[in-house]
Length: 287
Image 1 (cartoon, rainbow, N blue to C red):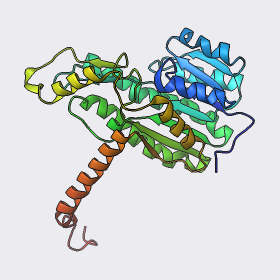
Image 2: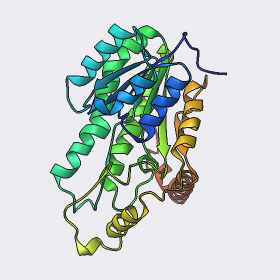
Image 3: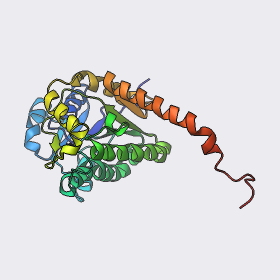
Image 4: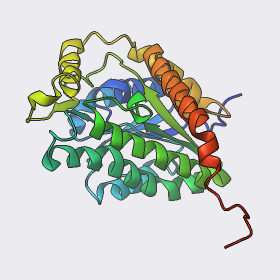
């Protein structure tokens, strides 16, 4: 079964200039839907308007601008009158140990990865509730489920997106809106290139941990195992499903890391279960 559809769905996708956002926008348009494609530099999206005339609205959108999400939604409502799918894709990463990174380096990442998602979602919900149903797709990462040395602050931003999404899914369920958390592994996009920053400070004390992650990331840009087109094809299946998953890991590497964490969590719980259960009052009715 698939997501119920008007003559064509209306999408708003952030971060369409490259990577997953660009591929998803093209796929949605190819299947006959309408797309509001956004980027900080909308001139990068002109090829979409030329290829799909009348079906594309391109907007300049900086999700860290407090006024921008509401302004974008006003344009969506004026042009199309509805919003069926919101894809919060804009984001970037930063690599470096927690001790190494400076506020000026990591706070802008939180503004985009977390607060941008919050404000885009808040701006979209009134229109989506009036539409009656839809999908909110939040691009997390396998790093939103499992931490890795050198990505601690990036992990923090994506873990926050996952907690936000879990609660949001419960809040919007009565309106027929479904939330999907996407957890890609390493795909051959520009994430390890222009979409990731490196902390300016590098402490030798972390060479074997976060330093190794820095070196690995630099050496593997362009050699990631995931095919973005195949990943987006699976994501599209999930978005259109009548009952989409709350979480959608993408890639064998993502699945392996998630499986490993689930096993480790289960082992910790099993080892400490009796001690944890013994922390209550002997008589629950005594206060």
